[in-house]
Image (cartoon, rainbow, N blue to C red):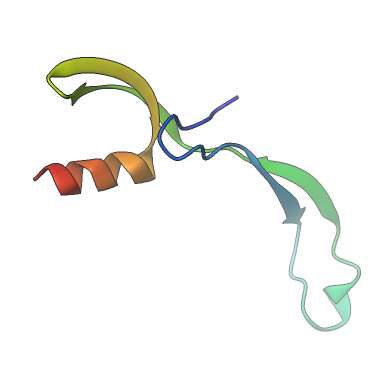
Length: 69
């Protein structure tokens, strides 16, 4: 399972609506269950002078790169 070691973001669950769902079709549009996977990457980052390999989501990776500069 994809899980970020920094923020703990993991798989979320929701529904997929197949076609337009406004007007009369609002209750008729078929809905199927689906998963939203976190975009997790394996990265080696420097932490207090030591290189550490962690699983980090792209949102945390962007935030860490912005604060490092």
